[in-house]
Image 1: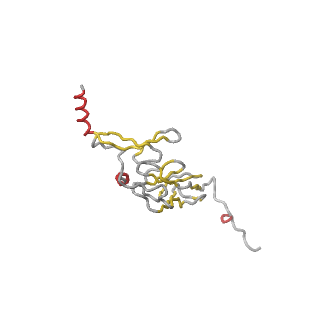
Image 2: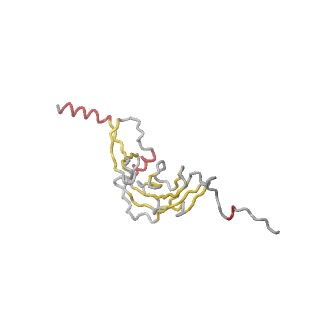
Image 3: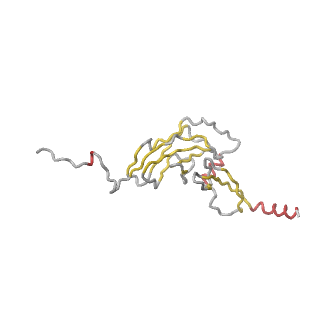
Length: 193
């Protein structure tokens, strides 16, 4: 009985390829999966048929980032980054009539170490679709109101290395219900007479 089972396992193993997936549960208890490391996520190895076209396959940029970090490389210490902050938008800034588009810019010194990635969180949710070495994030569909952004540096294993202080900003969209007001918009009084 053992021989046929062992033979079956040996024949099937070249047909399977390992796929790395990251799994985490958010504050609402919803389970998420990603092909990129996310702070606080657990790394999982999935066996998928070799040559299968999976939607979880990491994009070439992500593969290059994670494969750039090999065990033989030295991991920089936690205090490696002298400067890491969000400089745009500035703290307590009000952005008016942006159409929901907000640019977030990060300053980092020295440059991002090999195997490290930057993730941006808007109101506690990680923003997907940006390369791991991005220092400028063009956000879309940001609703009016108060928002907070935080940038996080993670290593190839998904461990947090450093994070910025949170930056609170406001998006204001004028409308008929809330027209702009102020001294510059008041009608001028006729002079003389």
